[in-house]
Image (cartoon, rainbow, N blue to C red; front, side):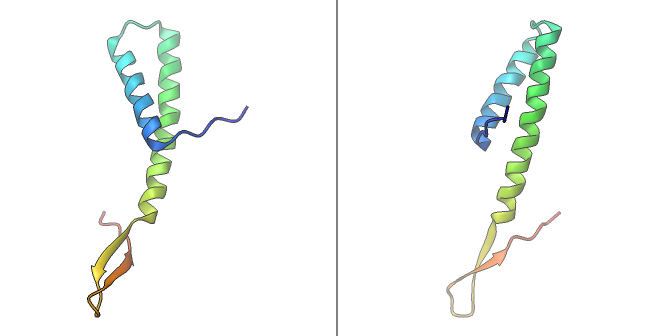
Length: 77
């Protein structure tokens, strides 16, 4: 069965829910492990979506004719 795609925002919202449930500490171990596994998958998915978005980002600056000029995003790391 294929996993359904979730948006970045949906993934973050679900991760927030999972963290809140796990922080309460009142879940059975099996349910906690299941939520942890779901969270790990969501984290990987959100991280991938964020990486893809970062690759699309461009810097704008004024060119010689004072019009905006697109430059590729440079990693400042």
